[in-house]
Length: 311
Image (cartoon, rainbow, N blue to C red; front, side):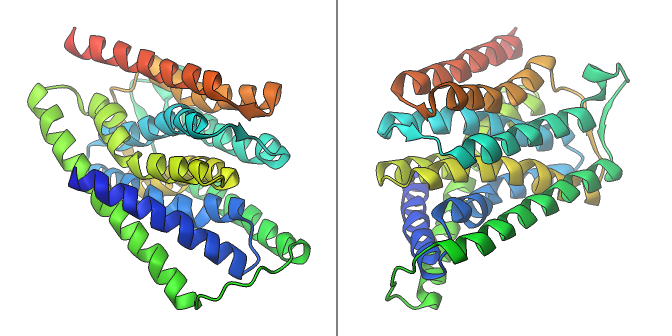
């Protein structure tokens, strides 16, 4: 309960502080969600994947990122849709959500050689990691252009709080999110290891849900407060950071060998953002029944994983 309380309070502080920062510097909340909030809520994934890669647990490292992105795309936006109908902007439809899909496709093409090419092992090499970091650079440049263009188009809304206080508020929120996420991860990992399931399953399920708790809390709080752009931007930005930055950095430090990731995992990894994009393209919004479909798809995936693990 302590970890959950930290996460919820941290999410609330992140949303409020980031919104103040956006208004003070004439930056859209969507851009803040894609960068500051997304990076802050991706820190638990980075910590888990980084240390997993260092000790040679490639399945846990990659499985954590894949599972987190699946959880982000299906559960977080599905849960957000229960709080308020998520209206998808034109830019989110044409750029932001496709970026999340691109991240999934690029990682699948680079890493899952046994599925795509029939090779004995899956390897995320240092060369592949550099490719991921190159895409991360493009993503950051895209956001720089958004900020540059947005400043010339937005009217300034006066914010009385000093910048240092806003940044401190955000920093405390990030700290609470990371602490709360780590408390949940430690507890869940101990239980999972006692059950004797594989590292890939741990990464795809327990660790993924635990490290995605900050994104879940942040997006749900943002949706409840009517900040829809931030709710979507947080999920999309987190998915992009997870793949391009987290795995790019981990793979550059040490090549990652993956052995237990299954074809179904790859299908869900790509299918999550694809389903999100299809709903956005067809209806330009995500309402409760669409959110229910997304959450149920994730539940069905978990059932299959559990049956495979205990079977």
